[in-house]
Length: 304
Image (cartoon, rainbow, N blue to C red; front, side, top):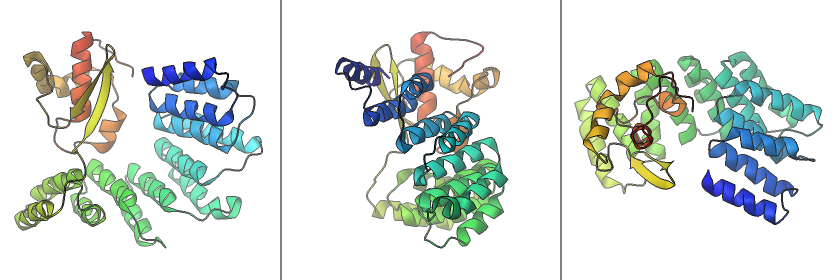
C-alpha cells in the first residue's frame, strides 16, 4: 500500500492523473493492495473511462468479494455504451459465482458469443468451473470440463480441485489433482496436496510413486508464500516455516489460532476458499498472527 501511495503521489506531482492508462493502473493497484475505497475514488473522479477502466474496477470488487457492486458496475458499463471484452465477461462470471447465482452466470457464459462476439477461452471455462464448484455442484463442474471444446489447463483443474476439497469429495479431488500433476509436474504445492489426498484414500502405492515423481522434477514453486507490512517493515512468511516466528508467544498464538478464529468475526476469504491446503500452518495464518502480536491487537471483532 505504501508503494502504491508513493506512485500515486508521483502521478499527482507530474499532473498525470488525467491520463486514462495511468488512472487505470492506480485503480487496479489500489484494489490489489487492499484499499478498494481509494480505487473507487479514482474511478469516480475520472472524466472519461475506457473498457480497461471498467474492468479494473469490476475485478477489484470481485477480488474484495463485493459481487453486488461488481454486477452494478457491469450494468453501468453497458449503459455507457462501452462493449465488454473477454476480461469483463470472465470477471462477471466470477461475480455471479461469489453471489451464488449459478443460473445467471451460466446464462452470461452462453451469451458471450452472441452478445459480444467473443469465443470463450480458458479464463471463461475456469470461471464456470468455479461457479459450479463454489455452489457445490461438483458433478456438473466435471461434466462441464468433459464437454470443453479445448484442452483444460491447470486453472480449470485447480478450480475443481479446490471445490472438491471444500465439499469433501475426495475421489473427484484425486481425479482433478492427477490432471494438475500432469499440467504442472514441478509444482510442490500440488504434490503436497496430492500426498494428503492419497493418504486419506489409503493409497500407499500412489504415495510412493508421487514421492519418486517429485524427486524427478525440479521444484518450481514454494509451498505457499505471502507478505505483510507491519510498522513500515515487510515480512515474508512461507507455509510451515516456524523459523520466522519471532517468539514463544507467537508459537502459542498459532497453537490456539483455530479456536480464537471461532470467537473472532473474521473472514479470511482466501484461506477459506483454499481450505486446509498444506496443513494448518498457512503462510496467511503466520502473517496474521505476527501482525496481531506486533501491533498488540486483540479485538473481539476484526474487519479486514
